[in-house]
Image (cartoon, rainbow, N blue to C red):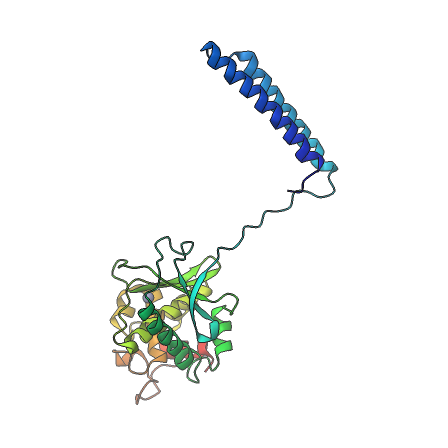
Length: 277
Ligand SMILES: [Zn+2]
């Protein structure tokens, strides 16, 4: 608040008045060992009423109303970047997850490579969106509002990672870091990033996919079949971007050597359209 205006002076003076009245009151009470005297309570209530009266009159005379309070954004402790800065790794981002911890250095380096590969060699590649800027646009992200990757040591209900927008921040949370087979982690990350993509569109992509495909019972994987439309979408995106990921050959008639005749819209076609390829 600006100093020196009439309102703050009025409130300050009145508050001092209340303080004096209350201090006087409590000293008298302590000395006498008695309950508060009613007239003292009445006095302070009258003083509060006077403050309120002045407070409702004076603001109208001020040239400007009270300025809105802008909360400063929580600062991120960024420890690494991937995908040209569209993805950042943050330590102890408590505002995104109260249990967020520091990244172990050796695992962090492996994860940066994994994210680089997932984005540069898959999402942004010729078979994906075709460029990193088109990928970022579809995901609703920028280098000013990148995907934040955090680590929570321990296991959350068995899932190695979870992903969605948390308010204004697209966030991937890793719970376990099994980086010994990087190609497996790349698939996991492609899957998690698909949730970020779906979440950026209020989960309407998965919804639309399930209601649009002509072979809805043919899922690429058991996870896609068993764990609901969100997992179905993330698995279908992964299967579209990573050859050989699907275990059910009937999920599409486009992949591999299968004839392109049975369906004009299967999960592969749906994701391919979203990718604009
Ligand atoms: Zn998932």
